[in-house]
Length: 517
Image 1 (cartoon, helix red, strand yellow):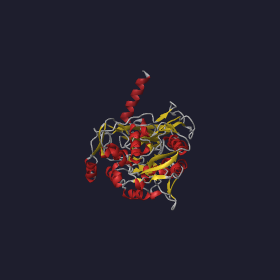
Image 2 (image 1 turned 90 degrees about the vertical axis):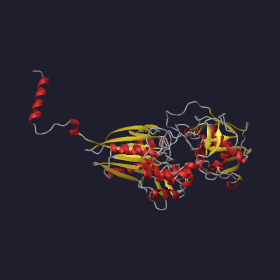
Image 3 (image 1 turned 180 degrees about the horizontal axis):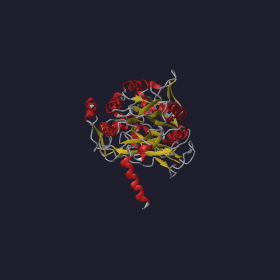
Image 4 (image 1 turned 135 degrees about the horizontal axis):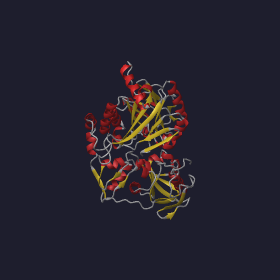
């Protein structure tokens, strides 16, 4: 008799006479508990974006409910940036976003740099209104030594006997890019992460998730220095998937254009992570809106209707994409800079690319109040200064100092009246190759009038500290809001801005292979 026939007969006999049922080997030796994490980041408005084709928190609510029905072991996480900036936040200081998150069932959020745009007191108010938890470990109030706003540095959640720990981190440069106040301190992310991992392990959780709002470079540093299993991040407004130190790093784009689903398969025996599965779920007009979200729409209906008011026209599409305005000359950046310059009759204008917030291509045709305020939602006043050629060069050097290594610096300069070229392969501070104002080579001692916003001129935002002692020609009490300057530019004939070589990068290759400065 063949060996295979003998084995079959033995198996049949075992089935007939054994009182113990046979179970699959995998089930008998191991059982994984699946915990599903849903991820969003950088969500500034609850309505759909891209002319209604993408995003929308009512659609996210539908997806969350469906996924939670599939797996009750589900947590919904936000990796920072929601209170500001947006058109609605100009009026409500972010309260409308907290109400939206409360409605759709967010579980935990960490801070983004823009959570501090209205100051620390407003953020504390928004935290008190939140029905979800705030998790952040490296933001401390100096006066108390405690985590800001009594947020939790980390949380432990248990599902079917297995535990996961989640802690939050925010990029330290929030100190200069937003308005956290003098009492708020941002601790080193890497050192904080090592402390959090130790404390989470001591609480019995062997799976550690970092919920972060930092650059990819900083996320990779944390993944290499601390024993985290996964980083869910934000900040770049770009769909990114990477890894470092054995930990996957995942980021969605912005305004809920997609939902990240991450399934953690955790051993019930050991409590350790067995494997991770993830996918990106597009949020489109084909996704139904949950009817329960209609209460949020009704509450803010009058504001939303007013935003449809037409304020001008453009005969060309306007490039409002964040990644472009933070790295290249754009036609929208030129339009905004020209508007500042016209409003104040200045020689030159400088706009930090990060202040252009719409983050999408605006179609040619009618421009509404929503478009206008989405482009410039900060309500920043203009300031006209007198600067020397040396100061102007220093400012532009600062503006291009962080270009490279896939960086998208908010301080990248969109300009008017200025033409300059730079070489990003050179050391920071030595990159400007050629600099002209209205066609004339800039000399160090020559004086120019420059217009920018109070964020740059007064606060030294994005690192522009060189303007703080410059003579003021027109203070904010004698100028208009940035958005009003743009509205005036749109009045009359349709605009047709174009790129025209105001900013030229001379080195041809982006630094993508090296993480060295």
